Image 1 (cartoon, one colour):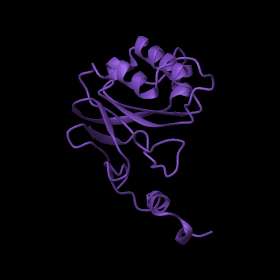
Image 2 (cartoon, helix red, strand yellow; image 1 turned 60 degrees about the vertical axis):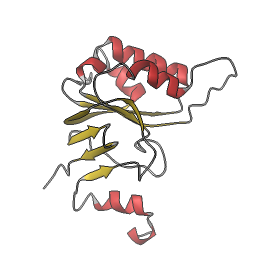
Image 3 (cartoon, one colour; image 1 turned 135 degrees about the vertical axis):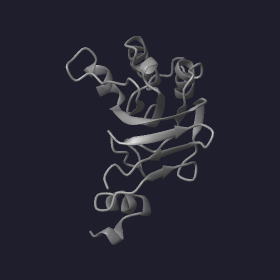
Image 4 (cartoon, one colour; image 1 turned 180 degrees about the vertical axis):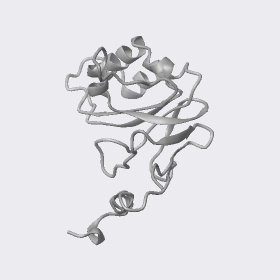
Amino acid sequence: MGIENFDEVSKSMFQQLFKPTAIHYTEVKSPLHIHAEGEATGEVVGGNLSLLVNSIGTPFEIDTKGKLLLVEDVGEEPYRIDSFFNQLKMAGKFDEAIGIIIGDFSQTTPVKTKETLSLSQVFDHYFTSMNKPVLSGFKIGHCLPHYAVPLGTMATLSSTKKSLVVDAGVN
């Protein structure tokens, strides 16, 4: 299988390996939802939510001070995501971050039929009162198509433009 068999998203992400360019993520790629208004530029840190939470209190704990925090996960029910977000909040990770990028949360339907918050209610509970940009709906994480966002690169998250612009990282 050669690159000619890739879909357009996979092809563009593959080509990033050889000729890095800025990534401009807007609603053209997927619908985005604003949870809190603002614009911030900083280093992108984060990743899989459950792994980030499990690193708290270890030498590998994530540093979010002055950074854009990216979170995504797969196979976690809303009550667990609520618990993970609460842990990050109590650890000060949301307060220290300058913006929150909410990637893909797939396979989150509750297994049991008892009352639970929806995923969007969980997001709103934690993020609507923040004074920093918080957007969800990015196809980043365990989804198809998915967009690769290199951690450690600089990016700008804007609610006004409903966008995430990630620098090429390497010239």
